[in-house]
Length: 69
Image (tube, rainbow, N blue to C red):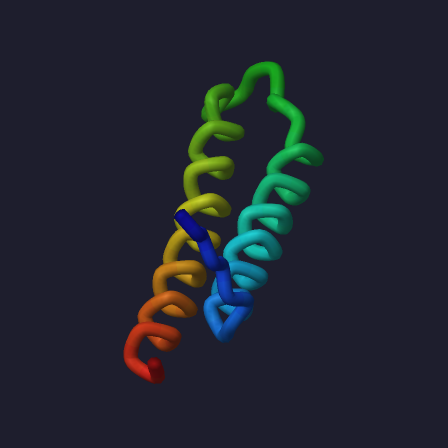
């Protein structure tokens, strides 16, 4: 039994995925709760926004990869 993993062009969208979610995690880690005011629960919404953007970028990268291969 053999198992072969070929490093091919799928590494490009994988790199985009890692970079996008790394960026969104880094951006979210610097957000501090406001501790009051009108919107005290804003950091979860900001987290959701940044990770949603990363998810969309990742989906676009994998879609481009799927169409080109």
